[in-house]
Length: 320
Ligand SMILES: Cc1cc2nc3c(=O)[nH]c(=O)nc-3n(C[C@H](O)[C@H](O)[C@H](O)COP(=O)(O)OP(=O)(O)OC[C@H]3O[C@@H](n4cnc5c(N)ncnc54)[C@H](O)[C@@H]3O)c2cc1C
Image (cartoon, rainbow, N blue to C red):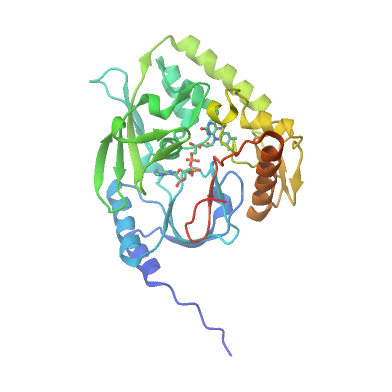
């Protein structure tokens, strides 16, 4: 007897009609820097804010969850994959240009790579994001995470954000209207499509030298060449640590966890707040390492570590 072909779900058909490039069963491990993740029921790459709104419209009318993915450099996806729509803004939503009528203002698309943003603006003599050269995501993900490094982060330079709200409305939101936090911005399910930044004029040679130095420092001090998601835990704030200011990496190191391994997931020997995928790590391996790290740091120092990486379940749930 012939095996029955699974029914193509209605909403996948509706998506394919809207965006001809919609893909079914794409393996998500290829779309994260951890190289971990199973199949996505559907993946789409809208090229305009209107197409983003169309996708969100299908999702809401069909009751399907949506995961917005940039470079996938701060997510831990599940081996079971994602049962809804993975929305990855296309590179056409990723330009960079200076607003000639407003000195220092730059307009950047959500899909533009953050390291390139740091280099281009520094090269043109504008300061404000040059220290983000080692943050490997794209600008949409950078805004959603309020990504930062060496004292700079997106909240300091964003003037306004163009987004598509969860209900499909195209909006421009001023920076002060957003709830910026440490490595987090409350977007309520909206999709960032672009931003306007305000940078300050500075000496381009000095900025380029700073970029070079910080990039070298990154390469030497972090497992940059291994599959990972950057810092796994947020740095605890000073209040939680009774005024002392050790980073999450220092706490994990002092708890003796460098090299700690479950399956193919290991606390990096180079930087203790990184977990690296040694080859075929599963999401379960990484979660087990994370749980052990949290419990050993708590036992040693009484400090609760909170994940910076977004741990995303197949049903859209977020958290360990
Ligand atoms: C080697 C390495 C070093 C790193 N160093 C740093 C660092 O120094 N500082 C730092 O802050 N981070 C660092 N990170 C983490 C990561 O690069 C940043 O958090 C980055 O901003 C994530 O961008 P992304 O495009 O990869 O987002 P993703 O990982 O794809 O997504 C992250 C979150 O943002 C949401 N999101 C993505 N795009 C959009 C959008 N367009 N609209 C709405 N929501 C969106 C996702 O749904 C998810 O919740 C590092 C990561 C790696 C692998």
